[in-house]
Amino acid sequence: MQNAEQNTEILNKAIAGCLDIIEQDREKEIIARRFGLGGPKETLEQIGEMLQITRERVRQLEKAILIRLRISAEENQIPGLAAAEKLLIRNLTEMGRVARLSDIADRLFEKRTLSSERTGIYFIATISKSLMIVEESDKYYTSIGIAEYGDEKSVRKKVDEIVALIREKNAPMSTEELDAKLDYEHPDHIKAIASVSKALATLNGDWGSVKWPVVNPKNIRDKIFVILEMKKKPMHFSAIAEEIRNSNFKRKNVTVQAIHNELIKDPRFILIGRGIYALSSWGYEKGTISDTIKGILEEAGEPLSREEIVKRVLKVRKVKETTILLNLQNKDLFKKVMYELNTGAPFSEALARQGNVFPKLLINMLKTSELTGNLTEVLDDMAAYYKTADTNRKQIISALTYPSVVLVVAFAVLTFLLIYIVPRFQDIFNQLGSELPAITKLLINVSVFVQNNILIIISVMAVLIIIVVIMYKHIKKVRYGLQWFMMHIPVIKDVFIYNEIVMFTKTFSSLIRHDVFISDSIEMLGKVTNNEIYKEIINEAVSNLAAGNGLSKAFEGKWAFPRIAYEMLLTGEKTGRLSSMMENVANYYEEEQRNMVQRLKSFIEPVMIIMLAFIVGVVLLSIFLPMFKMYEGIL
Image (cartoon, rainbow, N blue to C red; front, side):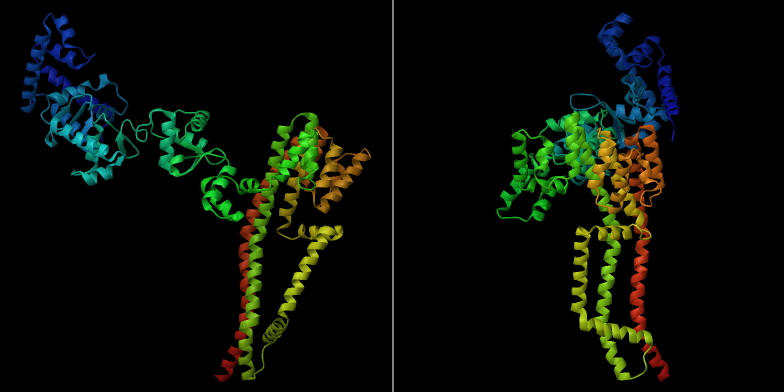
């Protein structure tokens, strides 16, 4: 493959060869100026004025010179022309036998060329018997092709045929669709012919009218439409901006804000989630979540369960389930809050009067914000706080879900074996009358006990679980003991400790940042935490502060408060940067908890599988061991 420099040299040699065989300097001047070889192209009038002859005489001379050059080309008398023809034909073959002059020039020179840089190729094609030219008009671009595959008239006819097909369908057509309706040797030939037309444009392999935005987007809105149509799925406005910047559009330097503004203005785009847009042609409609729920119920014509409503809303809106559920909530609560506000009650007081609906921490933070005037910031912080709390809760549930499921399965499998499988083998063993191994006797005794008392066992287990739950909720010592036990279980203890540390430090940081006194912050933390171990530590901290001692002393050496967290608390206390230090601790242990959950999952899965295999293995061994002894006796 030759490079741009080599291609330029080949073409220049051919042009020089053509000019060299022209004997008269005046004729050389006419051809050079007429085709723009070595300078700008000039009109017949400009050349006539320079040579002091008429415009018509210039035209006659040009025609005569070109005839002589074509004859010399046919007789292979022009130095370098054959190499230039070979170069052009090879590239045209690879491009589909015909190409716009601009396209083949860009290919040969490996850059975006100017019209003045393409004149040499046009000149060579003009005098070559192996090449043909499609002259520019309102319908066609200046193009050159391989002469043996058709002249200008036949190329134009083929172009018009493709244009007619696309207009008949009145929708973009892919090259493959056109190939199925036309008789061409290769789809590349169709692309080459179609590219000659000024009436057509292409994008992502589809051909259509230049007036259709889907193949020829001219403004930002059209480009957004093309991206969404191409991706076939709703997208966030920032992702749309990124796709446009990475596209092959002519002008693709767009800002995220510009994209967002255009999405808002154009009715073709529907907001279906937080910054997520879809096309209205996909069946989405504008409106709030409440409007969507109303439309779904009207369309259904019958009552729907909450789960079914959520399911149907999620098909047309990219929102969280909680958002839908909030819109399904009884509006009486919000009406009550609005009533309290209208009577002059502060926002925090309006929420507090609703009983235990709203968390104490939120209400106390709102009280502080009402004094400092930063309500919006506090609400944003609280939203982030409860989101983190929910994420941490889900991480712990995720870590415990797998072992819980495996334990349930193991219990179910063991129960099934004891109730249905072991009794059948017990009958066989009784008939044999041989002495059974100790492990088999134990298994049979357990099986008999379970069969006779299965309902009692289940009832006792259910009662015990209920008693533990009730005691956990109402008896402090039981709650303390169970929490202490969970925070000392090997492997999973750190998950619980890290979760408590994250919530403690994040809450403390938020309180300090919003100008709540340290003593009030610690006291509030003691009220909002549900962990009795941390309540004990926090109460000690409150006592220390009341006695004039430092805050950090209460946390020193406590097993439930990691050393790193203590050091950061001590540093924050000494430097007066408690809020930022606690935020750093929260971020650190939040990441540690996430990593711990992942490691825990990787560790627990094989352990639980081995445990399940061991239980089943012991049962099977107990069953088959007597049988093996029986076979040994027979042999």
